[in-house]
Image (tube, rainbow, N blue to C red; front, side, top):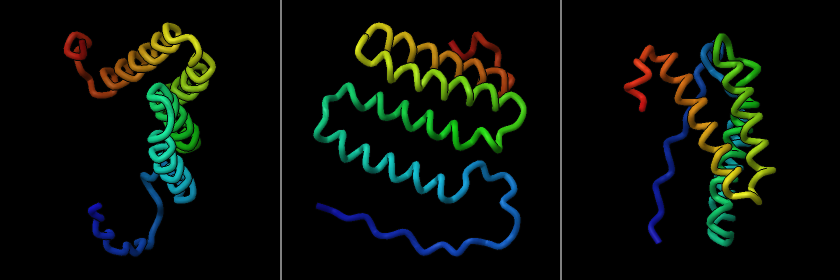
Amino acid sequence: MSSMPAPPARTPEPGPAEGLVLREDDAVELLAYLVTAARIQLDEAAENGPKRLLTAAGRLAGMIIPQAGGALGPLLEEIRRQADGAAVQAGDPDAYTATVDALCRTLAEHLVDRLGLDATEAS
């Protein structure tokens, strides 16, 4: 088993947290969720992986919402709403797939708009 070298210690720079969208505690909470979900996934059914990823996306969206501005706020609310709804539909594979597909479309439409792309380029 190979181990990765530890990253160098990082000393936080003083100054305002301008541009940050997560508090440190929220980032650590999400990191802990992702790492432990990866471990749990080793012993669980494969279909639980997408559910855990959507749960993480919903949690991240919820953490970012207080700092979000402009068009990002409604997108994050939609991601959180659809991620929560997808967990309920996990017992119905077709509905679950449709919900995840809708969430992908919602995000793609936002990115096309935000980046000023032609919608035909995103297809």
